[in-house]
Length: 79
Image (cartoon, rainbow, N blue to C red; front, side):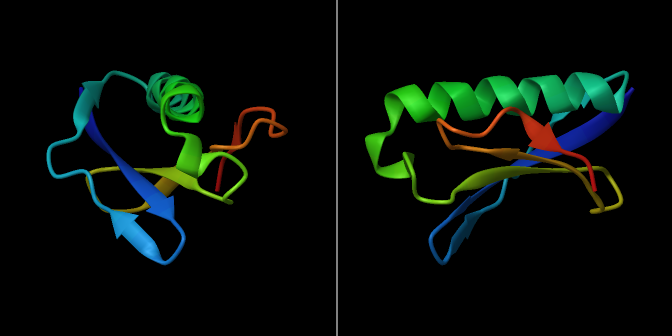
């Protein structure tokens, strides 16, 4: 299993995920990022329409996925 990290980009700030989570496949980490983005959209009103997003990075610090925290965005994107 591989460890993936979920970092929050908000305004000029980046909140790095210090611990990450273990997933067998990168697609599972991407699905978790989309779920996290949906949760933040509902629970944190200051993130709504702010251009914020979740970056998923692997153990080598490479970005593997990006999920927008935006009510108009449909899912995320791979990089």
